[in-house]
Image (cartoon, rainbow, N blue to C red; front, side, top):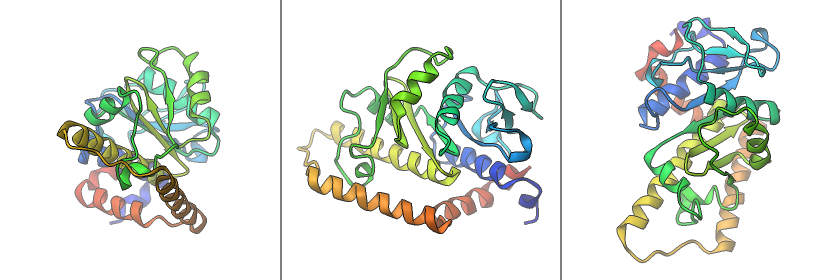
Length: 251
């Protein structure tokens, strides 16, 4: 397939992430967002985000919007601008965390359910242990339309790569689109499992603290090795899935 070479890798990866979020049922109509740092030739400190009004299954590498950190639209082939709440959240992280290349935010039933639980993600299984003592929280302040919230959001995120937006949803970030996506998908599965477990009424056996911390560190070491090697076989597998089922994403 020659078409992917017509678009920068940043745009292809981000468009694929949008399609995968829709594919796995993590989207919410035209709302929620995934952003990634834009190619250098599209603007200094700019990021890519979805056009307002499109479903995630309609996002392509071509129609992603390039926006500067001050809100200036640098490129918008679709012509509908962007969602203001999405700009507030994503510009906050891209401005405050120079180590982050991608930010994902979702409102799923399971994610919102866990975001409403006082204790957040519990150490109940291997999916959830990735997040053991490694999830930030940000208190609900209403719709994210106030730019002043950005400072508080970044302060709450700190150096974490996952955050629960209380009473709202989930947020993940990573040094690549693949890292942010896979972290979000694992966080979503941890939330789905937790809701199912708590709903079952069965007696629960959580993972002991020492083992939970050991497992979390094992997962961190694996991520560090992938970063050092510059290869991510899991994201490569997801990207193949996206291109196989949604080849139009490269348009």
